[in-house]
Image 1 (cartoon, rainbow, N blue to C red):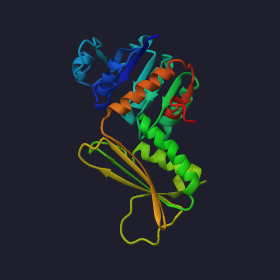
Image 2: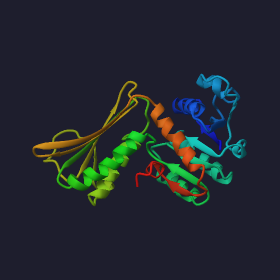
Image 3: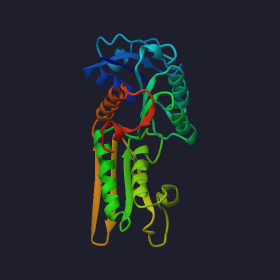
Image 4: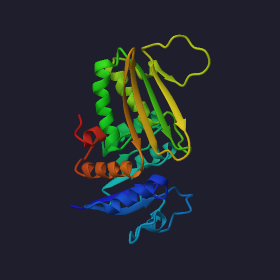
Length: 268
């Protein structure tokens, strides 16, 4: 069985890598490439834009025009574009893999609503390694989370828009859930000036934006005398793209429902 995949944001940094991974993956056919209407790449061959030979797929500016040619749409576009894309996929009965981060409440509600009619994998990070870290965090937080000071440090390239990263937020949510806290109440985003003694019930976040860092995340559980650190460092965007394509293949057999990478990797 061949799964027909479309890529939103096909001319972007992640879109090009997803196209490359799709081309290399057995059982996958790239049938659509989407960009926003003002993109200078609309009408061009997606393979030429991404540096891939013999792709023969032209970039279009509308999901509606190609929805009947796609089994799963992979979307890593900006948070400002995602609601429109979700609605177009839902109306066209096209499954979605969504890796966009920094989504507001409206976008997340649209995802939940659309999942009643189409199948969606939505995850802040598609990396297999990161999702394994999520599982390890559940164990660590359950064992020492209430006794330890928890700090989450993340670093990304200078052009990343949202901070902290969606992955860092998810890491904080996991720790909070396993220690019976609400992240909205206990998160501390950066520190400055003179402060009182650290509140053990808080979860701290530190954000770094520099150069071309692809994505580093470390969660520190520190007690008096020892600390446990769970880290993931990405050296290529290809691991995120590979996870997204893996999710698309898995999702192709689903009709409706909202899933994440923990479902895809059978980690639940």
